[in-house]
Figure 1 (cartoon, helix red, strand yellow):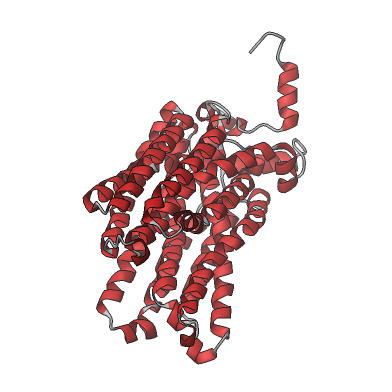
Figure 2 (figure 1 turned 45 degrees about the vertical axis):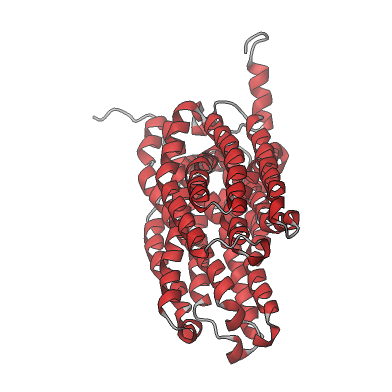
Length: 463
């Protein structure tokens, strides 16, 4: 007769960390492939495809405005996706967001143009962009929660980092597909049908991701928590009420810690404008900046799992805070190199910044934030905190442009702004709970009642 299996052993047997990490990578790659493709198309072709030619520069502004629509939708979507993920399950969010993002992107490639249906064309584009924003609100949080709760307790950082690896992969894949089309096709063909190809190809990523995610089992931690609720061992599931009653400090901590994303937005968007725009008189080749982004993202794909594994050994805080200090230093040097027009130096500094140093907090924030919350509110806590923080980061290029005031010599103001964001993020992380990487997943993020009970059960004078 076989010996009985302990509950802890059953949880370990139920975990499939590799499969969960692969599911997280595939969905994140699809999400950021779609976002990068949309941003490229919004800058290059949408002004002429979806907006009246007579509008001139207004068409470009309107096209880029549709890019920002998703950032408006994401904070609202975080409440919806967070509630579903903590009440129904992680798998429901992962499959739902994948389908929503993939189908929306594919349909963008099928849209009629302004010349064909008039104002209906940009109206449909905005609707699909809003749906993409709702999807993005839950994608990373859902993938992080799934991979985190499937991971062994001592390797949570490593397995959750695959979500961010997929992010970098999508940002490499998008220009690799779009730019050859723009270079090879005549302008009339690019505007008539060529721009649709990258959007339609997203169906391939959608199918692959769906096959992987559909077969993924719900996390053992979520199943155990749901069973406890059904048995009356814990209150009935009301995730958002519980989150804001017992865990609002952690939501605020995630919100402020997420300010580090401003460094990435500054590198990906503002630096491109600063280096290439005629307004600043530097006029570095756009091709150079594009290759910088590609190389930096490839380096990040390699370094992210290494930093994440290190955090499993030494803790999240040393890696996160070390990356913040390095990012503050290198973003200043990077912007200074752009202002000086020193292409070799800015290339080296840019790869070091985005590929190596920024990858430190980028690698560990999924596990860091997940460890602030218990299973019952983990997905909603991460989704709401990060999406509101990321929404502010989305305004970084606008703020940086205002700080520049049209003068390249004002680059130090933007650097100071980036350093300030790193300081805010650092304070949030530094004041967070200690050594969470050593705590079992089932014991993370106790509620207020549990903290009070533990304090009452601890004898006076015992730490």
